[in-house]
Amino acid sequence: MLSKADIERFKRENLPELYALLDPTKSSPQQILFVLENLGKLPPLFNGDLLLLVFQHAQNVTIRYWAIKNLAKLADYRYTPALLHIISTSQDSQVRREATSAIGRMRDERNIDCLLTLLQDSDPNVVLQAVRGLRVFVGDPHVDDALRSVANHPNETVRAVVQAASAKTPSRVPHPEFPTFLGNVAVLGDVLQVLPFVPDEAVHLTFTSPPYYNARDYSIYPSYQAYLEFLRRVFQAVQRITKEGRFCVINTSPVIVPRVSRAHSSKRYPIPFDLHGIMMQLGWEFIDDIVWVKPETSVKNRNGGFQQHRKPLGYKPNAVTEYLMVYRKQTDKLLDWNMRQYPADVVERSKVVGSFETSNVWQIDPTFDKVHSAVFPIELCQRVIQYYSYVGDLVFDPFAGSGTLGAAALDLSRNYFLTEQNPLYFERMKQRLSGQLFVKTQFLSLEAFQEKAQAHRQ
Ligand SMILES: C[S@@+](CC[C@H](N)C(=O)[O-])C[C@H]1O[C@@H](n2cnc3c(N)ncnc32)[C@H](O)[C@@H]1O
Image 1 (cartoon, rainbow, N blue to C red):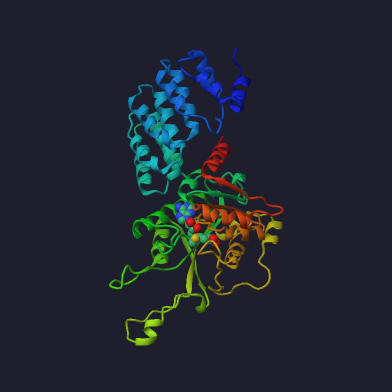
Image 2 (image 1 turned 60 degrees about the vertical axis):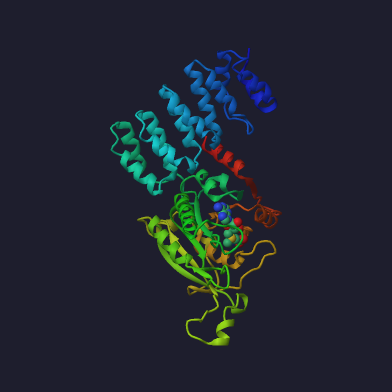
């Protein structure tokens, strides 16, 4: 007689044996159902194709339901087409609901369109699951519009769920705390694939320097518009994961993309000014602009031509400044409210002692790194962290590069969460952040992080 303990053991030690128990050509429907009901958390390398096979062979609707329920645990985008096929061909409401929930659980923005389509389904159970799946993407104008339209759905439960979702519920997590699985973690992956797995209102401060459009070789976008759209999606997600009334500081500067030939001129892109409009549209509150000034000798000399010919219009100043644009997540609460959330000893330990930067012009030398071509000076990170976060907070850099923000956070007794998609820079980050005596960074692949996040939700 097969027991739950056997299943647990097979999961750990003998996956082929487990697969055999699920094989519709070898195992009885009763046995398959018992296994499906007792599978629990799936092992990392579990083959979901087998669950689809079980689904296809089963006559019994309960087995079909449990096959999809288990497939959902994998949260694997590869199964979206199969799940959509099941939704469109199956008659059973429970199965269709579970398949919709499985798509939502992936938290993958490539599924937004199909979830939007499922909002039109005639079965309210399917619509409810599509609403749940889309809630992670609130802030996306298409998603917001669609959810607004469902607020008038003929089904009373759908209406109630959508209305409850749009009512602002205060966070249940105390303001100084954050989900522990994010603390001192660095993820190798595309930030847009990581953030859907980060809970709402998780970080206290974001400080980042986004890629410089196509001016450096580490990222290439098809157009400036596509680049701005990418940043819009990132800072929309950052807004969701930011705690009420907390800050997001973005370091940018206009960039020059070199000319293609002598017959063309180089093109200058006003990134900070375009990004500011996007941040306003997203609903961030503008707080300050800080100008970071570098010594003129450290920047590229553009004076050469003008120095010679002195003809008006040909003047090109050396660009010695970058911006730090400071935004706050919108709230009706004053900053005092944020400060009052911390115990007195944390406030005391977080106080900025000694001299501080009194103006919005900060003179700091740039830093050059042997691996990464555009790193933060650590002093810049130290100032931002000290001025805009408290001891014990979680600070986030979506474009972490060599991990400078993490290094500064460590020095200042803050926790950090970093994402970086380039393996070369991730290695550099490992070199910089490993070897700490008291704080151990977890360097995770995207898959390992997603698994941790799923475990946190269970
Ligand atoms: C300006 S650099 C940041 C450097 C960082 N401040 C430091 O001190 O090392 C921007 C970084 O964003 C990374 N990046 C670009 N697109 C990304 C994406 N979609 N997800 C995660 N990282 C990305 C690039 O690989 C690059 O390392």
